Image (tube, rainbow, N blue to C red; front, side, top):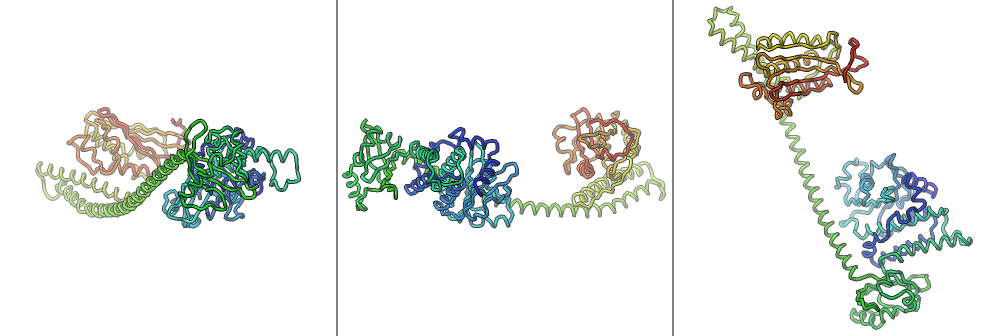
Length: 639
C-alpha cells in the first residue's frame, strides 16, 4: 500500500476523528510520555538503544508508509517473531485492512473479516492488549472452525490496540512460535512504547502534510523543508529525552558534557549552565570507578569506563541519592557517548512493583487455567449426564407408550362388560348391584382418561403426534363442545354460558386436538367451580403487529388458583386439581394442561392463565391466522 491508500484506510478507520488526528489537535491526544515511565524504567540498555535508534530513524522519515514499515520491522527484530502486521479497522463493515505485513508484502491491502479473528475483536471491544498463549486451548478461539485454526497452529498471539481519543482504530497483530513462557512482560512493554512512538510520529507527519519521500531524497532542497525536518527531530528528541523520566547526558570524545535533559539536571542537582561546563569525571571521579572495578575484578576495555554501575551521590545542596548509570557509545556520531541516569531507589521500587505484578499475573493465570480445566471437565460431565438423561427419557417415553396402549385394551373390555350388565340383558339387577356397576364404569372412564393423557403425552414427546389440519369454522367447533359440556355442567348445577360471534371464522387447525384443549379446560373449570357458579366460553378476534388471531377464553367464578400454582400449572405431571379443588374431585395424572399447551403451541398460538385466589380463574389460548387470507365477515379487530 502506498501513502495515499494508507491515508484513505486510516481516514475510514478513524471516521470523524481523522480531522483531529491529521491536525494534531490536541497535541497530546495519543497520551503523555509520563504514562510510559514504568516501561522506560524496566528496559535494559540494549532495549533503550533500540528505542533510540528508532527515534533517530523517525527523525529522517517523512513517509507514513515507511514509518509503519519501520515499526513492524523493528518489532520483528526485537521480539524475533514470525509474523507482525498492522491492521486498520472498519467498524461499520466489521472488517479490517492489512496496512503493513512483515510476513508477506502481498498481504498489504487485503481485507479480512473480523469474525474470523476473535482475538482482534476482544481488543476492539475492550481497548486492551489481548494475549493468547495457546489458541487451541483458549476458550476465546473456540468459535473458529477447524480450517481457521490451522492458521494459528503452534503459535502464541498478541494484539495491541491502536487508540486515538479512546477509539480503537487499528491493531498490531503479532505471532510467535509457542514457547513455555509465551510473550514476556518485557516484550509487551517494548511493543507498547514503540506503538506510542510511531503513532505520535505518524500524527505529526499528517499534520505537516509531508510527501512520501525520505529526507535523503531531498538533500538538495534547502530552506523551510530543512528547518521542518530539524524541528521534527527536535520534537522527537524533546519528547523522548527532555520530557522523559530518565536522566540523559551527551558526552564528547573528551568526556565533556555537551547536553543534558531536565531529568539529569534534577537528579544531579546542578544548574544547566554549570553542568555543561563540567566533565563526566567531575561528577563520577575516575578513582571511584577504578575502585569499583577492582572490587569486581573487571579489567578496563580499551581504556573505557565501566558500562553499567550504581554509585552513591550527594548533590551540591546536600541531598543524598543512589544513581544507576549506563554508558553507550554512539557509532558514527563523532565519538559521542550517551549516559543514562536513573534513580536506583525508584528503579528498585519499580522493579519490585513489576515483579509483584508479574507474580500476581502468573498466579491469576494459573488460577484461570485451573478454572478453565475444571469447567471443561464439568462440561464433559454435564454432556455425559445429559446423554444419560436423554436415554432415560426416551426409555420412559417408550415405556409409557407401550404400557398405556396395553392397558387400554383390557380396560375397554372391563368397561364394556360392566355397561352390558347395567343393561340387564343377562338378568334383572337389584339397586345395590346397579350402584356398584355404575361406580365401576365411572372409575374405568376416569382411568381411561388418565391412560389416554399419558399416551398422548408420550406421543407428543416422541414427535409421533401429528396435527391433522384442515380449514373449518372454529366457532362451530366451540358451539358443539359447548352443547356437550353443558350436560356435565348442568349435572353439577353450574351454569355454562357461550359468548361467540355469529359469523363463521375459518382457520386452518386440527379440530380434534382443539376440541381436546376445550374439553380439558372446561372440565377443569367445572371441577374448580362450586354448585351455583357460572362458567363462560367466549371467543374474540384480535390483531397485533399486523397479525390476526382468535382468542378463546374459559372463565369461571370458582375457587381460583394460588400464586404458588400459577407458575407451574402448565408443567408436566402437576396434578394441581387434587390440591386446589378439594378431595371431592378425582385426581388425575397432571398432564392435561401440559398437553393442551403443546397442542396450542403446535398451532402457532399461546396459552396462559389469569387468576386470583378466591375470585375465579380465566384460561386463554390463541389460534393465529393471516389477516390478508382470513375468511370472515368484516368486523372491528381490537388490538
